Structures are given as structure tokens and as C-alpha cells.
Figure 1 (cartoon, chains in turn brown, cyan):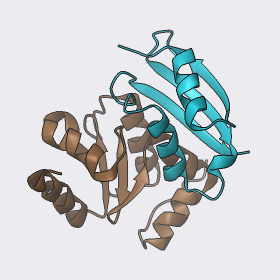
Figure 2: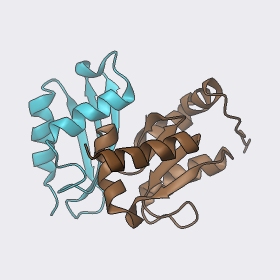
Figure 3: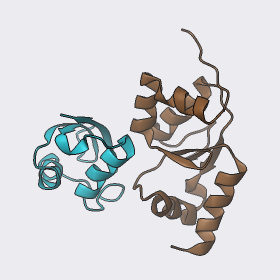
Figure 4: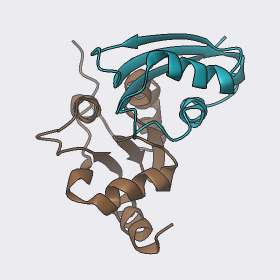
Length: 113
Length: 76
């Protein structure tokens, strides 16, 4: 694996507790799957760093190699790869994502509807 | 670009012979699918590992020829 792009990814994961590698930005996602994960994180009111892979081809390919995962978005919590859109949505719905945040000692807001 | 529904099914069957697979072509464009897959091979594995087994079955086509495959995996 390319050392530089590997380092770039590790730096982001070190700097931010929650990283979402996505297409577009949290404000303007460019793909429905990225939008869905960003919405889950917004709903939980956690701070996250959205990293737009469309602005960086190197990162776009690099992150797939890094996690051995072929698709974007990819969610990381304190450096741990959590999953893509399907897994994050499923974990949110069954409460596993909330448990994971608790385990990692990240505060979040569970809105009641 | 794109992948036929039957081709996806047979690639998954090849890797996970016991799998019960249901696939929907969401947009009718051979490129956006949703699949539910049940297999004994998933038992004891994390969701990430389960999805990776499916991606591996697709032999690198995921994210390339195939743009979107929403996955739901479960143990049978």
C-alpha cells in the first residue's frame, strides 16, 4: 500500500474521533448512501469529520485498500472501522451503534420521536 | 457497466452454496440492487465479515462494474 496515502488516512483517524469518508460533504452529500450515514450521525448529534473523497482520488482509492472494503461511505469511530451504509443503518436501528458510542465514551443524543 | 441480477446471484451461490438469496433491481438499470442473503456460513461472524464474504464473492466487481448493492445478511 502507498505509504503516503496510508499516512494521510491514519492522520485523519487520529485527529477526529468520528470520521466519515463520504462522497460530498455532510452539508451537501453527493450520494444517497453517504447522505444516509450523515443523517444517522446528525440525528445522534455527534460531532464528526466528513471527508469528501470526491476531492481526493488518492484518498478515494486509498480508503478502500485501507479497510479492504470496496465501497464508500465508510464510518470510523476512534480509528475502528464500523461499516458502510447498510451496517451503520442496521446498527442504528437495533441500538448497536448507540452501544458502540457508549463503549467508546462518545456522548450522543437519543432523540425521542 | 452494470451486472445482471442472475450473474450476481450465481457469483454469490458459487461462494456461499447454501445461501438463500433475494435480490431486487431497484432502478431497473442493472446497477442498483438490494439483496437479502441468508447463509449458515455467516454464523459467528461480524456484520463486516459477513458483508466482506459477499463482496469477495463478487470478485472485485463491487464498487466497479456494480455501483450499488444494498446488503442485508443473516445467519440461517
